[in-house]
Image 1 (cartoon, rainbow, N blue to C red):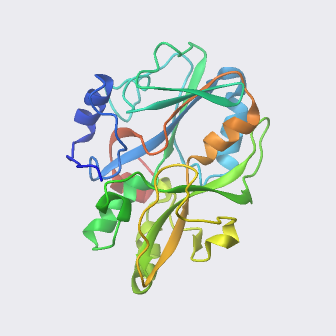
Image 2 (image 1 turned 90 degrees about the horizontal axis):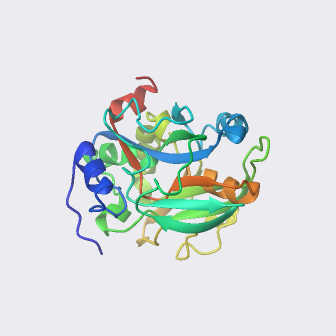
Length: 264
């Protein structure tokens, strides 16, 4: 179990830039909009934009940075090449490297997509007294590849990926209602209970992240996940892509209420 010290978004970005923060970002900067990061060569950017639009539940688009741009408008002074705690590097569809600083592998033709993350609504869940088990246990959220296909676009296709949070049965309805208010953070769950119906055989063996405890009287609740993009990158075989490592997000200075309203 990790000991968590809560940082604000700007401090976390600066510490990540210096290599001093390398952990998952769940529970950090409560009230801030957190995002996935995907950077692809400009020649594939339109295909990826279509893929994002066709899979908006899993990939709610927050911002696109043109090729050669590194600073997010949602976090003045930021640098998307350095301000994520960990990055994954893909070459020809294979994840080949994890780095703390992506500048050495960055190219000037990369177009960066910032995509909403369910970590954003977790502060609201905790304020409402709803459990967020991976934060309680100091772990990365469990993520699973499902047998549901994402809608393909151009060179991009692959399975839908989901996150899971166990919720006591009497609190499921409240959880659904609360998270539905955050469309830029994936909104309401896509599936409740019966993980086998998603093709998930064992909750204790997530494809990404770490397993968490599911207690008696709790049911697994699943949300669409931005790691759907990583699965599509693997299937695409494109020569280069850079993403956040699952659970290690880019934190903006935008409030979670913006994710609530889906506007800035």
